Image (cartoon, rainbow, N blue to C red; front, side, top):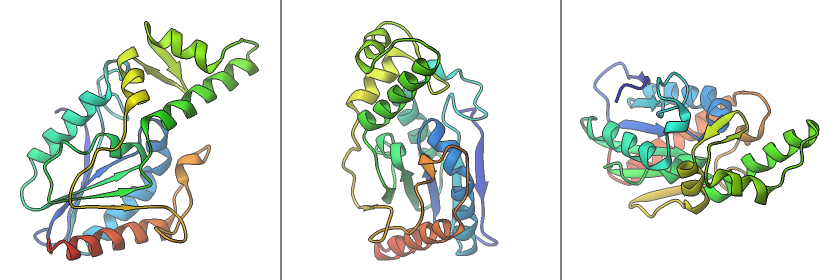
Length: 222
């Protein structure tokens, strides 16, 4: 895989490696800074942390229109295969849709989202943009169009295969798994993926790192 990978290592030998699977599409950009803060916090606790670009995302040379969920899932599995030592896969939002093929000691998911909910958000954004431009469109008309041709959604040119896979995608069962929500009963922080611009939440990053470390201990990994 030729995609860029951000890796942060601890001072000594890593206790385990955390493979972060970011949210999908623009949600990845809005959460990246906080994920990097969490990676640094984990490195301070002796973990290696890896945040890869998916094909078609960020610095990838692959056009996004050539990517789909299957390709993303396979790319992550390939990355995981190349990691030595204990591996923890940590996914956020739509990242949980593509993390199950990776071979790991355990999985950790934050606010996993269904593909259908992500697709609805993208389609509604397109309908709103069309309305402001004086173009009549609807969720149904866009989905009909997407069945036979790539569709531009919130700046993302998505193939019919990607859209069809998103519509049906659900996070798959894996074990052992810790799935946490965002809020008072889960990870404290703000839903960065809903912001209009990228931001960061230091407290949320620290909470993510602490929860992953605690989960790894409870699984006997460290």
